[in-house]
Length: 137
Image (cartoon, rainbow, N blue to C red; front, side, top):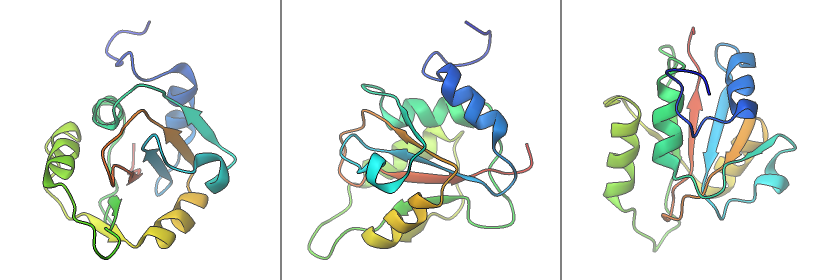
């Protein structure tokens, strides 16, 4: 165990965060996300809520300041977003108050395929998927 690093950050995830460069993206996917279909680089975090992962990640990296660094999935027509999910994620991201880009479902999957890695969490909230763009550190 390393001091100052959340226990939800596995050694594999810590290595991935360290290897990411400025502008690389990481997907924190919910438990239902088609992780293996979207990317060959999937890190399992079964049972760990996305907000816990986001809080642990936010303590280790900065978000991009040149582009919108937080991307979430837009609801499919007829669905509604639960505003508590976004509020929970913003709080976990050290109170992130900036814009959140919303992508249509298939566009989100396409972007996830290009991500540095996908972390498959235990999140069960509908539309609980989020992409972070890494900043300078």
